Image (cartoon, rainbow, N blue to C red; front, side):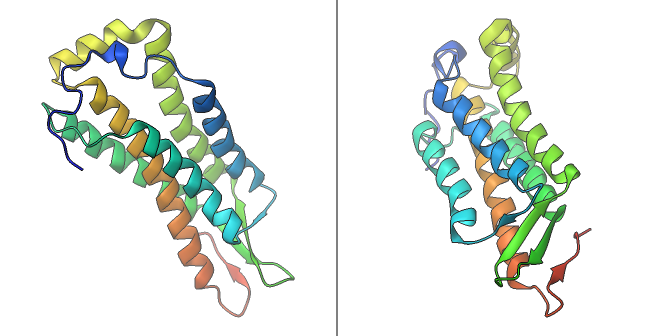
Length: 188
């Protein structure tokens, strides 16, 4: 739902000033999912749905519409593009093999895990910067560039959502196209 007035007048400080325990656990969980894939992880229904459920729930808690005030739309588009870039790149750098039981196993390369961690780290870093001293800097930047607090929240949440969804969809699509040789090379 696009809402041009969604929290448009709310100050940045009120919009997610502090990371919650859930925020930390969600980010740790998303990093863990890819780190575990360094050794290989079954790409079964559970392996595909768990990251989607995590970010879907988070999005339902933080997204209250897509703000269009000032330059919020540009910021949100940049967040979506960044999420698509990180997610699709991480998926392309993940190898897929067919296990002995016929289930596809995903193995993240170091580059794929690094991209995933950088994407999550950027969001956490921004939040921590705002929380521990950077709030004034971000508020001045936001005022100068006509960005609302809700614009920042929406851009960061959609970045995470698109990163997870794009990676998951690409891995699922690639797993469906495995040849009889039982191996899919790293795309790219």
